[in-house]
Amino acid sequence: MELKLVSTTLTVFLLMISVTVTIADYIRPQPRETLQFSWKSNSPSYPQQVHISLAGEKHMRVSWITDDNSSPSVVEYGTSPGRYSSMAEGESTSYNYLFYTSGKIHHIVIGPLEHDTTYFYRCGRQGPEFQLKTPPAQFPVTFAVAGDLGQTGWTKSTLEHIDLCKYDVHLLPGDLSYADYMQHRWDTFGELVQPLASARPWMVTEGNHEKEYIPLLKDGFASYNARWKMPSEESGSTSNLYYSFEVSGVHIIMLGSYADYDKHSDQYNWLKADLLKVDRKKTPWLLVLLHVPWYNSNEAHQGEGDGMMQAMEPLLYAASVDLVLSGHVHAYERSNRVNNRRPDSCGPVHITIGDGGNREGLARRYKNPKPDWSVFREASFGHGELKIANATHAFWSWHRNDDDEPVRSDQVWITSLVNSECLAEKSHEFRKILMAP
Ligand SMILES: [Fe+2]
Image (cartoon, rainbow, N blue to C red; front, side, top):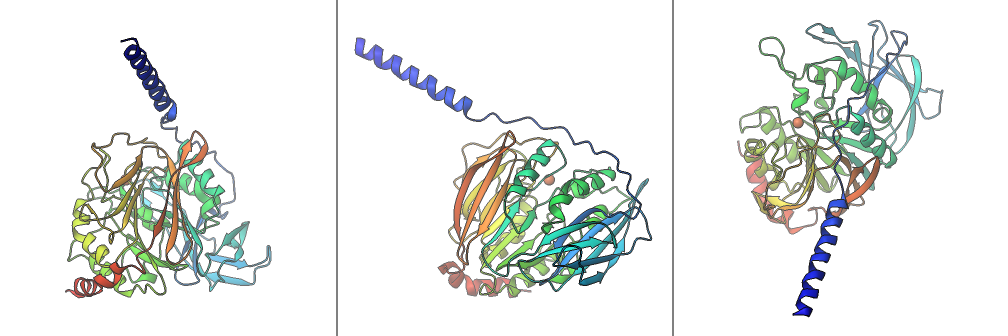
């Protein structure tokens, strides 16, 4: 009897310890305030909001904004500081949105550029010198990934952590500025990301916060398309809302959750044509980014990706896509290889990473029990790093903003499908589905 009492007391004691440990484990922080930006008295032709993006093989697009309309759309660049051996001219645009008129938005394509090389450049023949590094020709290559960024104290923390990582290209699966119709917030977002986005290419796709549609007055994505011009023309797409690019042995498809995706749509037909062009000998890794996740066990945004998934998942499966990265849900989740809602070793790994730090806060509630395809899920701010080591192996890690320290909370080696039986087995199905009218 006495022994039983001692054993019960011990069990209760151990349970108390385990509960204490669980509670003390990690306390999720509240949303942080939107950052305040001070007004700067630069000359009207001073380049602002400088960012770069990949623009076809060995080329980069340099984008910036000036208040003054007469500022030239010219980039001078070279491999030594202050000595510009090359010069490129480009295009410019601007837009009106209700009572707001944008500055002159410059887009200049520079190149051909050497791989894995630092270039020094100047925009519009004035202002400070910027520095960029081109991605390597082959593996290893590293991508930083963070969606749903916004411009809060948490965004700043996420960007500081990304800056600590030695990465080659930033991938952003939608929801950039959270301007939400307030156009000056696009300008402050451009200013916030400039230190990183002027140094490494930022490849983005659109989220719902980019839409800014006003019935009868404004079509969607006016500001996004004017400011964040991506290589759609270079990849045979007729829309800035979906495109593809290749970098260091990786083919990356940026899909548009807010463009038509049914079987008769331009996006669907462009995706088929793009998948047919993929040469896995040249680009062993095949990645897809989109905003609204197809595999999501969070209570937030449940089922929003179902229509697009129904239309396009068979294409991605037939093409043996390795990894699908999405945002929208303000939390992190990683799946097993999955297809048609069931674990499938020939399907892609799906990762939701809409936790960059926007003002709306975290999506804390998950559906239970956890679906069998879901491996890891957590509602915290953070960013991901994808280090592709070679043609077959990549290391994925997710870094939580633990207060202001980056803490690696999830990590996994991912093997590409390039040498798998999946690719061989599906080759007939692939041709059939992609060649279908
Ligand atoms: Fe979103």
